[in-house]
Length: 196
Image: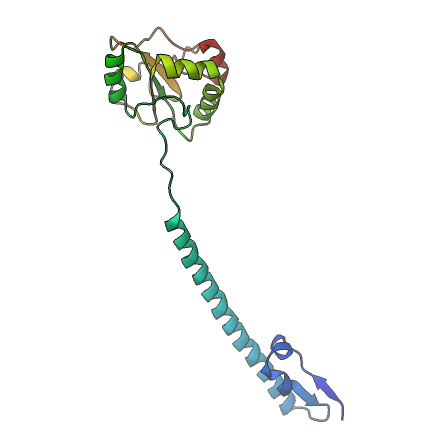
């Protein structure tokens, strides 16, 4: 008597393999029952596999959530990448106050983190050591990502990046401007050479 094996994914692995052996002489209902049993085992295996996958996903989500809670968030420095060696004041008002007591001019840098022009200017500003030294020693420095209430801080409009200078007499120095007619207080990376 020769035997054949009805193969399925579950028969190769599971308990149903012994039930899948059939005699060539037995046909009809028994063959159909074996195929039905193999299909049921396959369906059962898929259901079990789906449960394991869902359990693994749930475990992964829970584990990753725990890792995020344990991460320490490093507070952003006041430099915001414009030079960590420079002493930055937190607010425009604090800068005005410190300017009066120290008798140093205030440099106000308006920028946005997501602005590519601001990012390019920041990179050039940090790369120029003489500018970093001048900012550290000769100015009260503040960089702002939000506009101030002072209308003098936007003499020709609200745009970024722009750099304004205020002297110790509390006067915005409109005479210190960039080279662009439509945006007087904007600077580009190549303008950093002029500031040295």
